[in-house]
Length: 371
Length: 100
Image (cartoon, rainbow over all chains, first blue to last red; front, side, top):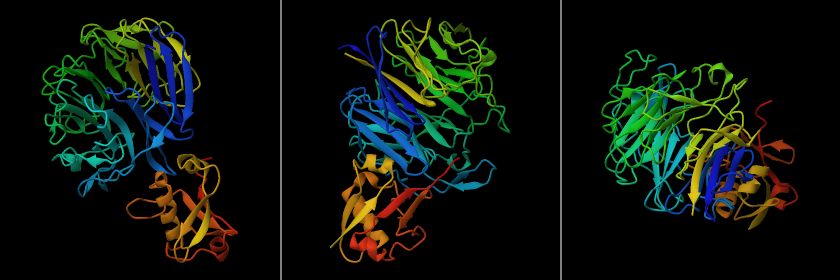
């Protein structure tokens, strides 16, 4: 049956929600892995019933699970994430050298062309790849060995590689983002990387226009325009139209340009979504009103979408992987809050309804369209 | 060959798809290290979840108890209590209380 499937990672397990193509009636399964911190759940574009989940706890460390039946049953796969070379040190919060240590997998990016290949972005920052469906993982060390690596400092959440974008038209082209190192591009499948941050400006840096050190929160790309990438930075929403060589701020009339996720409309490459958050110390929306901002002009001019969303006392956050867009027409949008509410829109963001409330803190939301 | 009973916390029982205690076969004297090795060999999903995969060191929030004793700080080569080797007591792998 045609429909959509949501993959939701939370602080106490994973949930799978299913609906028909009208996206009205939702059936929610879970929690899977109850009690575990689930950072990200993501399916293969090649085989949507193949899904990976990253889970961890302080007690038991990192586990990766895989489902081959659309999220109904799961089995552990490989959890050995060993850096390919002596990682040495990066800078700690206080500016002193700190040993590079694996902590957890933040983000999973299945290959757009091969069901057995999946990439993992980890803390401390590194990019791993599995070519056997997640049974074994090998680091692509060129990123961590970037000449600026020893100067990278963690963001508040850790030195995490949280974003991996693979160009479906040319899988050799990849973008990643690391908090708080910056955005990087590879043109050779992840072997070598360029730091692509020219034009970014961050007041928390001694030199605001420095090459490295920008706290990039999320990147989003439309598959038809792989040279155009939108960025939600710690502060500022930015875009590049030359594959990261130059960035321009497009925050425009947003009520706040702080936030975490950013997403691009599946059929309109100049329609972009962000969720404004008041500030980096007040991780909740301005005025206690939860609103999604949509630009139909590629940034700068934004409309605030609030119908069906709480407009008072909303002191909740939306994390970087917790906004997803489906490819139906009109497209659906989905996001989850740190307060455990899962919202959906089936009309491009014009109106919203909660499809689940009082879930644990939501880390991630992904959507699959099933045919 | 000795059969040793191992009691696991619920998250690890779920991960290993166990409904009760694990029973692991150990060749030679059942030391803590030998039991952990046998447990991980028979239930590979547990690799890395009790101790570091590379160093073999216990994860910080895991504890090893048996016969009313805390064995967590003992050498991996130390023999387990006789009751564990005899099968009348289980080696208990416990998640430490952390939080409020």
